[in-house]
Structures are given as structure tokens and as C-alpha cells.
Image 1: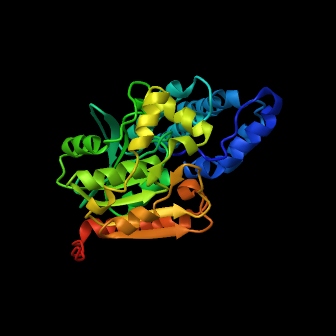
Image 2: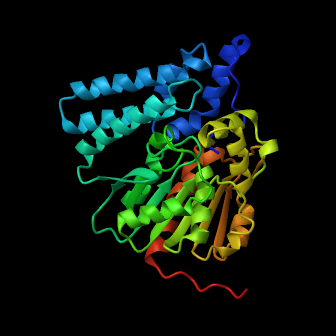
Length: 351
């Protein structure tokens, strides 16, 4: 999941309280996605109704597009396009009909940013995914960043930058029901099929995977079933989902991304790593936040315990996605992935 457990409902009687609660719940996530916190507080502070979230954030994004068009240099223009992509992405988090348009705008703005800032970046698409491959052509390893239920390839810039700084190539993707693909596809539990397509398209013998929120399940499922996964990291990923206990906003969102409530219920029933976790033989790092408690979502401790080479990191003060605790896990996780992909894996312990 990427939607916080205390996602407030939008009601006419409590509109201002709803906006304030939703904005506060998403602050660490928005800043983790690269939004300036002062601008975020200004934009959300002017909102009177949560139903106008998407409109307000797209207006802020378009202001950055205008700055890009006026910029005197390519670097400044590219930075404004990249900032616009982040604002368009966070516009998708609110209710209302703007999600598909905002996701498409985020995708386009990020493409314009990379054209200016990283002309070597490659757009790669397949039947079930869209993404950008960044980093050196001769990188010793490739890491695929997998988003969650309502996230996309434009969100996790700090993580991607940390991996790039360590010399790895990074493929940030939208899969079924995610980002720019959400308008035309629905979520699927057999995500290893998608990762297999990605590995084929990248032309690599092995990949590392980092999955965030529901992407953590996707990564663990793929690590159990796709032999080219050489190392995996999950961040705030679910071990198991219980549909009847999930908060209503999460159920509503999952229903939209699955194509209806019945499909969402079936999908949630498939999100269970009990049988798959022991099949994960590659190095696995599982990161959870101690303050990340969502009804109906079992955290990753069991995943780390059952996997053959699982390691577990719990940051007591971390929230969902640990956006309020990045120094406590992100640099170490990037170092861990770099080492896992460039050093031989330890022998499997006797079973």
C-alpha cells in the first residue's frame, strides 16, 4: 500500500479538517518524492476541499513547467521539468477524476527533464511496463525500482539517485495498474511475469529489485519465482493482506486499480508470501517502519525470517515508506544492494 492508514474521507461537513489530515499524512511522502516542504504547505494550506487536491497540485506543476519554458539554461529548465513531474505525480494521490491526466503529465515532464539533464537515459516499454533506464552504459549491475499501489516511477528520486551515485544502472518503472499504466491496465499478483519481461527488454543476465509498499510484495514474489533476480530490497512491503480488515480508503483505491471490488478482493487474497518466502534464495533486505501500522496489512518481519538469506531492519520511528527516517535506512540499503550485486552471495544455510 502507499495510501496511509489514516487517509481521511472527504466530506462537506469536515472539508478543512479532511484536507489538513490528508496533507499531514502525506507530508513525509511528498518531501521524499522531492517536493519542497514550504511549497507543499502553501499549496495544501490554500485547499478548502480535498476533492480539489489534484487540481491544486497540477496548477503548481504547471507553474514549474512555465518556469522551465522561461529558463535561460538547459540545466535550470531540466530541473524545473523534473520538479513539475514530481508535483504531477503527487496530484494523483488525492481523490477526484484527475489521476490519469496527472500521471500522463508526470510521465511527459519527466521525459523532458531527462532529455535535458541525462540525454543518455533510455525509454523502455513492454507489454506490461513503461520506464526509464538511467546510469552508465557499462554499469556493473542493474537495479529495477518497483512502485506500489498508488505510486509510480516519478516518485522515488532520492532512492534512485542513491543507487546511481553508487555506479549502478537504474530502471524506474510503472507496471500494471501503476503510474502511467494505471489508465489502461490493472494490478496483478504474478508480478514475476512483468519482471521477466523487464529483464528481457534490458538484456541483462540478472537484476536487483527494490520494491516500495505494495511493490515490496511484487519484489518478494518475483524473487521467489524469477531466477534472474540476484538481490532484493523491500520497503514497507506487505507479507499478507486481509481484505476485510483493510481501511475503506485502501479498499476503494485497490478496487479502482484492480478493476472492481470483486477483482480487488481476489487480488488481496493472493497477496500472501507464506509459501513463497522460503523459496527466495537470493540476498534479501526487508525494511519496515515501527510507526507503519495499517489494519489488514502484515509487515515484513516474517518474510525476512522465512527467506534463506533474509535480513530485517526495523526503524522504530519510521512511518510508511520511512519518508520521515531516510538517513536511518536509505544510504545503508543502497550500500547493501551495491555489495549484494557485486559480491558472491553467501552459501545457503542447511535446511
